[in-house]
Length: 607
Image 1 (cartoon, rainbow, N blue to C red):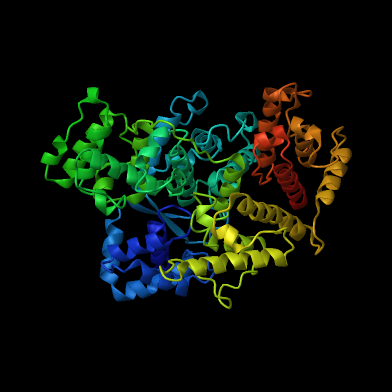
Image 2 (image 1 turned 30 degrees about the horizontal axis):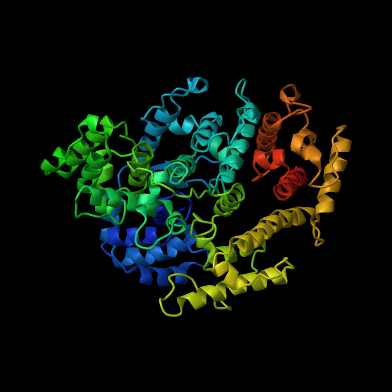
């Protein structure tokens, strides 16, 4: 890689704020603004359409390289300056097995320090991590401690409890083989909770590749921080309603937008005229943070606004964070992160404040609207595939048809005619914009019908209107076909894979492995015991199952869940990309059961 290419790669990683290996419109705007090239967002979207060759709404490195060259030529000095101003950017030689000689990657030292602090705080009391914690701030200790998979697995469970059944983890006498199994379980579990982990394998994490480890850690932490921004965890969230909004309207907002509204609500309650629209430039002077902390803090802590008397921005930020420390919320940001407006770390700081001190009194007679298990599974599946925009609400975020079209393109690569047929990308104009959204949705339905999806009574307007049952119907068929298309490609045949084919494979595999389990269909009652899944895992990878912890005749829900949690984690551990949840097995949900068996079949074919 030449020097100029290394420089471009460094900038790409520097401004990839959410660590997904791509940059979106907002991140491009941050680059341009920092280079004194502030550009209206509609112009940025036009640029994105020009350079976004794969039409996913983001720029990957190859696409970014083109736009970077143009920007750098126009304002070389400005770009160089902002890169130097970005706090603590480290460059390291790539150590992964697939890295080209001389390849370098950059990562943020400030983000590394923030994540080290959070992990020490969140996992510090875990006795099984005593050999790793507390993590050291200096050097690459964080990345080295990701080696055996235990730290990341525990972090996943801290963010989304019980995602990984820890009985499935290898914890002692860790050979490289056992470590690789842990990392496989970790990566598949991260995908199952909605992390977009592309081109990352167990060997990358074992090698402690800094930029890959840091990107994965951030996604896991972010999911956990934002998971409690809902009515179930915080019934007082209804106080953030504005105008004639409904609760569904509020909950359809992205989590970061709800956090901005929460901050502004408390600023208004405190009598301040200040409002924030982002977690970067608007919070740099610490004024809004100081007012917010005073407003939400328990009165006995005597939090005041004395930091505002300090004129030096860094010293003021430090005094403000002293107040946060009294509230046990001094996490993620240091004074320089506030002053420089690091959006990633400031989002984390505010989310932790919300989770700890929401200061929103519950309202009477408010219906608690919760995402169903099925909705969450579908949403996590989409996000793990890297759709753009990130899906926060399964219905609202699909109404313009763009995400559904992306899903079709991922299930059937090349099926969407992004250029020849007029697919309208956001932003949508006020006049005629709704019609363009409807056209996108109609195109998606047309593609589904062409692939013989069961869409009787469903048209594009149902997707546009956010009709729940009908939207779920098309999303389920896309998820089902995603798994079946993988099976078809692995089989090397053009013949479609049917449910009967998967059932036959399962029974033949079980019989060949000397197991007594057998299923007649995905509605077979024996599946609720999870024994067929457990036995299949042991057939695919003989000796992997510890049968001493299996309940052979589960008598109640607790017993069934005990088996199901282990079955799901063990399936992921041997490499199956299972999105189904333990509840799906224990309750015998035939749809998700099918995807679990199909994933196991895929894994057996890849061996």
